[in-house]
Image (cartoon, rainbow, N blue to C red; front, side):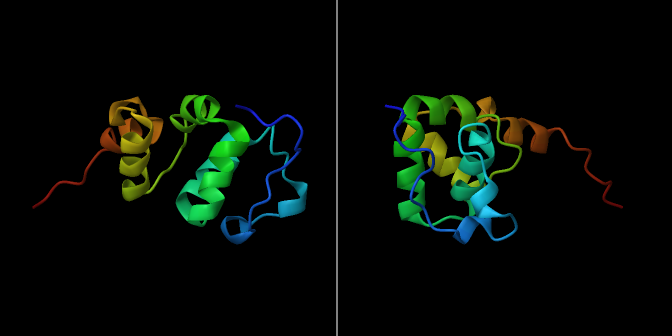
Length: 102
């Protein structure tokens, strides 16, 4: 269920060390927030983000993440019953040209 009363979740700034946390538009930049928290946030922050956006919105948006760590990607697949091939970051990683081994 989407939380329409809150404009931003009560999460730590841990995952947002490289941006101005107070300037983030949590509704417009939802994928950015989900990706940062999934990769670099705390477990509590992850739970709060899923609750803030709702499970359905999280599942619909997270598959478009540009980058997820391998363990995070696998966890999200298992926890939310998603297939790894649905993720943009996984299919893009697989299609990169590999250097030749001589």
